[in-house]
Image (cartoon, rainbow, N blue to C red; front, side):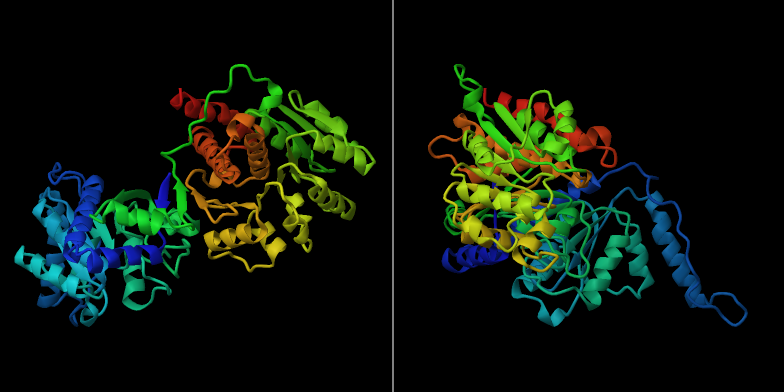
Amino acid sequence: MQVLASTRQMKEVDRIAIQERGIPSLELMECAAQAVAEGVQKLAGPTQRPSGDGPASMAFSVIGKAGDGRPTPEEQRELDELRDMVESRNTDSTQRIAVLCGPGNNGGDGIAAARILMGMGYQVRAFLVGDRARMTPDSMAMEKKLEKAGGRLEPFRLEDQRTVVWLSTCDCVVDALFGVGLRRPLEGDFLAAVQWINRLSCPVVACDLPSGVDGDTGEVLGEAIQAALTVTFTCAKPGLYLGEGAGRAGEIWVRDIGIPGELVYEQIVRDPAAMEVLDRDVCRPLPRRPAAAHKGDFGKLFLLAGSEGYTGAPVLAARGALRTGAGLVFLGVPRDIYPIVAVKCDEAMPFPLPERYEQILERARSCDVALIGPGLGREPRTERLVRSLLADLDIPVVLDADGINALSGHIDELDRRSAPTVLTPHEGEFARLTGCALPIRDKTGVARAFAEAHRCTLVLKGRGTVTAAPNGRVWINGTGGPGMAKGGSGDVLSGMIAALWGQKHLNGPGSDPSELAAWAVWYHGAAGDRCARRQGEYAMLPTDLIEALPEILKETQMESI
């Protein structure tokens, strides 16, 4: 798990480090630039490569012609120069690196990286996008060092064909236009630069954030860089894992640039509103199961799910729970679909729902956790049943799908609960429940506010699923992908959360049910990643997620043995 830093937190940490701790800002900038240069080296390769592997030719349009249709001598010289620029790629083994810099300190990182890359032996050209008069003192200092090393900061002019052609022959581009401070859509020269970079075929290294991505929300502000690698400094930013931003970041490197660790701890890690990312390369090891335990120790689950036309949802939820370790799963379904569900179940124990509410309540109370909602439908009678159970049950409840929809206009039923409750909506369900506008821009903010206000755990599903706890903690999930965007995937997840909540050895003193829910999301996404590699994103199914879970959970358990 790694802690994320909001843009506000990161600016404050930088300020304290420089102004109060006396750390030279140019020293921090040099460290950031070195990390960016290492990222370029990874993508562009060592500075010597076999000759002849660059583009062999490029078509040119004639800029202008004399009256007889032939280029003028000046036009011919320019055409020859452009042709030589392209053809030289076949004889010169040195990679070409373009560094596009804004006038702010992110641009200063890029200018310093250009100098370092020159020293590593690359052919480097650094371009300034924007107003030179707005360059920060640190950026100007880095420009002087670049000039001393033999380079220069050129104006970025797309109307100059020499610049356009040279960019088209690059092996890698560094995006150092904007850092964490961008809050409005890109426009003017910046928008043109980003659009041009995205049309190039070479990889892009983004400096701290892909320009155009909101560092807190992941929102793309009009247009944004498509990076192959983002080198971010000190702490990762939420926008690298949320929404469209997650798709623009590429691989993410988090690099230390010299900010003291205790300062990061004081200002970010210890913050009650700290955010954490559960990335692909981390996981929570599952402890060994107690040797003398019996099935009751691993949770008796009551599932209220299914309706006519939705017989798959209850089965997927039950199987997800069983594959995640639930000891006993009792699956209550409407009487008219019971024969269909019963045929599909081997390990779960389906039963037709009794007519009398008291009998349903009794069955639920005999269990450790209740899961309510997958495929349940929205009949008024069904929604009244959901709200009654929510009011009368004193066991943990997982509300999914139509279980959440039943709360629309009745959020007070949630507020009156004292036992732990988790809601697992996608954005549409959350909007119906709360009345918020779509799309949701600040997923972490709205999830935290809802969880705190209603004293529940909220799992707001989507790219970078956000899990928020009633105490203000937030986790952003870094696993999973678009292949999981199919009906039934959420049913599997709800069963997994219920299973983890029901296992006694996972819920001892000091345990956090909200964190368990966040890890269920991680396991679910990791299973999706495994399926995507095997079946591909188009063909994978929710049932494949369930079949991949044993491997994922076994691997995490083996790490704890």
